[in-house]
Image (cartoon, rainbow, N blue to C red; front, top):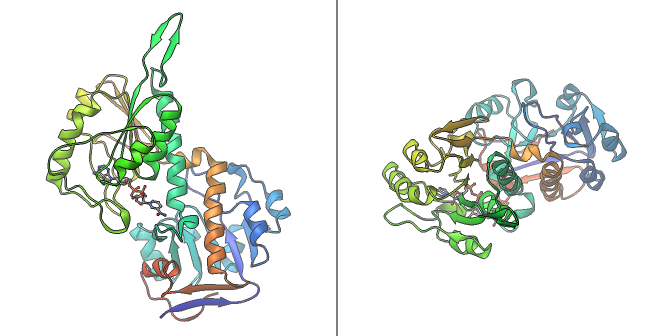
Length: 377
Ligand code: NAD
């Protein structure tokens, strides 16, 4: 058993400002610092919450000290961030970094060289016990909602049916490809806006979830390697199975005005569900919002953070959807951080990382180096 613990009443937890373009979220909000202040000291980088609507005074009122990133990197045993840190923000040797970036091999190598323990948030188990810490779920939920709003804005037709003296407008048809957290939230959001909503997923369990939201589940024929793999995630398909699935989905896509594409396999390139040929069969003016843009996209022409128009179909590849709703996205991210820190800080100043524990063990398991037993900060 490997235990890494910090026995230090002065344990300092730092919150760094996000530096990526388009990233407006902050990892911890003042309200959560107020709830955690008895367990550790908090140091927040100047302006860290500004873009999300939380100013430095709010952090100071909650009991945090506002400081520079350099002071944080020098003095904090635990450092919180939303996105992976840049090269000039890597914590010192033996420190603990809590952030996304678990699939970033370059980051993994940098952290390994510095002997930094990375608690990568992608590795939080998708279990009931860890649900409150599940950043992927909270942020995917916001992305699903925001994707419908972005898609609706790009359409030149209305989502709801309108019966007016000027005539009747038919409701638009929408489909969510991938009915995980983001897809189900997109389905619920599009239903609230009045679209005729459909859903598709390769996992059999998704049918009931799609239908329970009042949407129609699209069934496809043939060997598409359907099924659930480890941890409730979908199993990766072979190239042939993906090609079969694209052909089977194409006639359904031809009838849709709005497609929200969310299909992902953790740590792998996104499955390709829509090729150029299918785009040619879709209605001009149709919109695809591809949430898988960062991992290659569900559509052949998707480019991250760009809109590509092919045969009159607009294909959007936003990678910053949760950041568009930065205040609530930060509140939810921060709520996840608070749950994680509360779990790990079982007594004030004592951060307990236990390899035999189902949650901290899963976080430690992905280290690119073996953390030594003993003090970590
Ligand atoms: P994800 O972001 O990894 O993928 C999104 C969806 O894409 C998934 O539903 C997946 O089945 C689907 N997909 C993959 N390949 C596909 C393909 N070729 N065609 C169509 N769809 C494809 O998934 P997620 O939203 O993070 O959720 C993954 C699983 O974890 C789901 O079963 C979800 O219900 C479960 N989950 C459980 C908990 C919990 O119990 N605490 C929390 C969150 C999610």
